Amino acid sequence: MTDKLRIEAPAKINLALHVTGQRDDGYHTLETIAVFADIGDRITAQPADRDVFDITGPEASALAGDDPNRNLVIRARNLLRSLLADAGTDAPPVALTLEKDLPAGSGIGGGSADAAATLRVLAQLWDCRDISETLVQQAAALGADVPMCLYGRPLVASGIGETIEPVATMPAFAMVLVNPRRHVSTPAVFSKLSEKRNPPLPLDKIADLRDAPDWAAWLKAATRNDLQAPSVSLTPDIDSCLAALEDTGALLSRMSGSGATCFGLYGNTAQAEAAATQLLHRHPDWWIKSCMTGPSGGAPA
Image 1 (cartoon, rainbow, N blue to C red):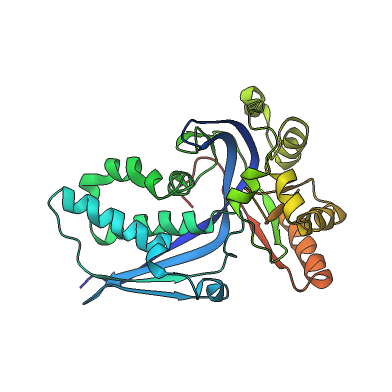
Image 2 (image 1 turned 30 degrees about the vertical axis):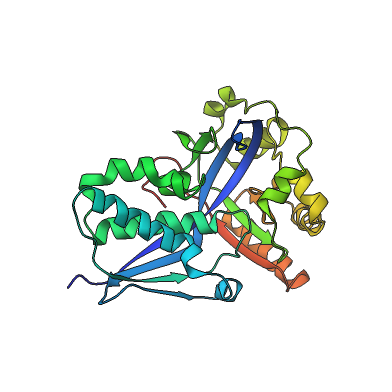
């Protein structure tokens, strides 16, 4: 019997997020630059006599009252099993465990990262090489962020998030992630967005950017997160997080996704770790983590 497999589900950080329009079906179009951290959730899978799903970890309690069949881990398992059935292959029962370290509903792709990691670990366990291309195409059915998390390296995404282009020259970044322990509703944030047709990302300059200060200066001057203002209007504590990151000397502080997690970008790991220590001392009730993001050119995080 195959040993159990364990795979990381890295946090996804939106360095910039421009909302560029809205389709007739209601979905918003966007352009975003995303990177992936060396912290996140984890998915463990192993053969079993029947399907089992457990949630453990420090953030598991946030999901305790949810219907497990709506969890993206289960939806990803079911999607892959359906694709295999269409190809004439049975997918046997599996025991899945989600180790939840990222706050739920926090704008850093937790659920989408969990879904992508589930697809990757089950693709190994069930040997899905014959449907790998179909799997990538169908991943967006689980959510617009899932293809990004499946890619797992610095990228620019457009459309509703399903069109992905790699960023070829991005370095690793030292960061601090801060969440004020507030859950933000993405639909509510979009409903508060006053302008839904905003300028796209000015991507013609990114090939000239070399290090963290270069990227931070360009991001601050030329890009935005169009969801930040409406999120702050609904959850003012986000502003407190941004101000706290600024006070630590971050090169750039900004909200990720639809919030409420914010990031600070620093010149090196020592600065990020010192900032995290300072913030934890001042705000022990917040979720605060220092991390590194993966550079261009590596394997998926």
